[in-house]
Length: 353
Ligand SMILES: C[S@@+](CC[C@H](N)C(=O)[O-])C[C@H]1O[C@@H](n2cnc3c(N)ncnc32)[C@H](O)[C@@H]1O
Image (cartoon, rainbow, N blue to C red):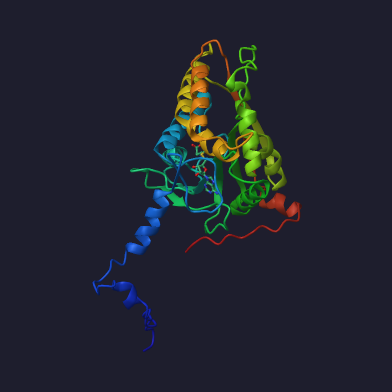
């Protein structure tokens, strides 16, 4: 009959799928539900939960304790840029972006705030673990995926953001991610990345060689490099972004105090929050890296706990005026005109119908 849609063929295996050994009908949803619950259950190790959607490890846990830390970290970054017109990001994306992507969204706080700021934009947050959100603005979408896989988003983005993705990828992985960002952006669209240097410094010599905090950063960088994905992302991102073809590159450097020791009101508040951030995050930062790649041999869980107890004591010491450097890089994909001048063929992303 003209115009009639083809019949949908029946999968012959459906009968065995639909009945159990006892002949009772089974729940059709159980397959997808169990996939979703495997993702949400993650993988447990040393009392912490890690993502379970990809085989190669990512060093950071995805559990309630770490999500609490992400939330406090988000506040630290808002406070440190409190005097800026937009403390969420610096890229000049204009008043009416349509599509924004947050890679490695974590708890999703940045994506939710940006969705509130641009109610007419769609803001996607993607992560290997589902963000634990019970409410989000209607224009905010969370997706579980590994950004090292081929991207399947149909709409081009106006803006792609990353924060604290240090140590998430090996150099080849970073190349792939920046290339996918470049290809997925509209001509003239922006990328922005904010990273911390995990090493701790003091300007007045109050952090000394005998302190655990003194060796903290180098120790973790070593572990991450043994794991193949260096934590030195703050040092490499600018060049990697330039090499991916981005232009109009800007960089802003920060010092984030560790504890409320600074005189300046904003630094004091940021330091206060950064102290709370460290307290919540410490174990999650340390556990996987030290128990897998610690030196001279992988540490035990108990050794990590003893070390962290000493670090916690130092964090409380008002005589140590420590800070961590951070930096933010933002850059633009060339406009169509600039791409033509570079004899570059723009990749056409077809908008979905
Ligand atoms: C340190 S957290 C930062 C979270 C968030 N951007 C923030 O600033 O609070 C890094 C996040 O990247 C995610 N991540 C790591 N590798 C990833 C990958 N291959 N694809 C997607 N997300 C990834 C982790 O699950 C984690 O939530």
